[in-house]
Image: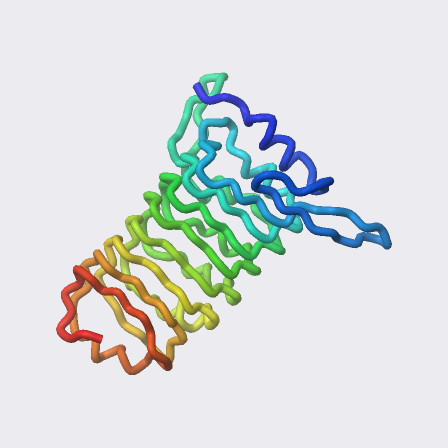
Length: 238
C-alpha cells in the first residue's frame, strides 16, 4: 500500500510562495501589487520514487501558477497503486494533467514513469511550453493534433513509447514552427513524409518500422539536420 505524500513534497507545493531555495526547488522574486514575494519557479525532482506516494502530487503542482520548469522524471508514477481505502488511482497521464493550468510552464519532463494510455490531449493547454519530454513511458497511438497549440515548442522527446502513424505529421510541421529537436526513436512509426519546409535541426527516428526513399523529403529541410534512422528500411542515406 503506498504511503501518503512525504512531508518534504507537501511543503514544497502547499503554497506558491517560498522563503528560500532548497534541494530541487528554485524560487524567484515576483512583484505583486507593489509587494515583493518569492515564488516557486522550478521543481527539479527526478528519481525520488515520488510515485510511491498516494495520491500523486499533480493536483498540488497545478496550483503553482508561476512555475516555469517541472522535472519529475523516473519517479514511477505510472504504476497504478492501491490506496488506503481500497481504491486505485489511474496511471493514465492525461488524467493527471486534466487540471494543469500553468501558463508560465516552459519545461515539462515526465520521462521514464511508465505512464499508460494515449498521448495526453491536456498538454494542449500548456501553450508556453518550449520543452516537452515524455520518453520511456507506455503511451500509445499518434500524437494528438491538439498539440498544434504548442507554438513555442522547441524540443519534443517521445522516444521509447508505442507511438504509431506518421512520423512527422503535417500539423506538427505547420503548427509548431519553432520545433528544432524531435526525438521519436524506438516506437511503432511506419510512415515519414515532410509536407513542406521544415526547420528541424535534430531528428531521431531510430528503431521504427519506416520504409521508403529519403530523397522524397530530404530537400524540405532548410538547413543541415542531424538525422538518426538506424534500423529503418530506407533506400538512400542522408
